[in-house]
Length: 359
Ligand SMILES: C[S@@+](CC[C@H](N)C(=O)[O-])C[C@H]1O[C@@H](n2cnc3c(N)ncnc32)[C@H](O)[C@@H]1O
Image (cartoon, rainbow, N blue to C red; front, side, top):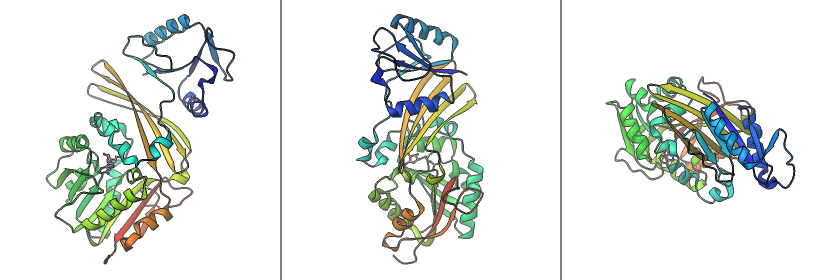
């Protein structure tokens, strides 16, 4: 499967610093073509390997590229339509300015993410996780605390819940996306598992004595505002028995490269998914772009999805989790092998908390 990315420059000013950064990251993955319109460019642009052509020749060249590639991805502010399904045009900039989203909680952004809604059936194809290993890790934590009834906060499509259910745990999975819950019920149904559509900041169940809870895969990080995080934390505390435990899992920001670009392919039945993922970290915020290239029964579809998350440092978590004397940190791990957490080196920051006996 080959994807040909093309940048089309109409004007010299067209390339901002973040666009250049994206171009550089992309060119390490795929052979990049940068075309400039020789008719309208007012001079030479300060970029290597720019091909100057007339607009008519550019259009002709793009059509030829569409014949010889599975996909042509054109980054251009000029509205170009070729009328072929393997041609995608993306206007620049294609990311939302952090200043614009930062005024709201990132939760609102997560609510609209395609992979949690329209593309939910692709969720399992889109992640590169080792669910068995993660579940084994969770079970070790739950065993130590003798926890058998579990709340999965932001359960997604229930990939852990199903395995926990098989191993004899009684699980309630909660997610505010009706699509994710519908997918969970379709692919991860188990007699010991119940799935509910609700917001983890405000759900209210009759049962208030769960033994354990979890929030997996860099998800509490959608609570970019302290008040959202605190509502989430207090609500879990309300549903746990005193002394119950909570596992919070996230990537570990200090050890991450500030710009990452990777790809993922998955294939089954009549579906091939190619996914390009671009991530950049600015301060404690990560903005990710997901380019989905789908081929199902010979029909091609393209989607662009975006995500914002806030990373928490361990000390910040300890302060927030301890508010009102609700939770105490009992362990911090750096991966699902159970190695201790190291701020500079760990791949993940997996923290285990105990609900205070009083509070
Ligand atoms: C990265 S996925 C993780 C899903 C699952 N924990 C896993 O490990 O596969 C994040 C999930 O959190 C859900 N979510 C985000 N904010 C939520 C909220 N406030 N209440 C309930 N679900 C939420 C999304 O709908 C999405 O399914």
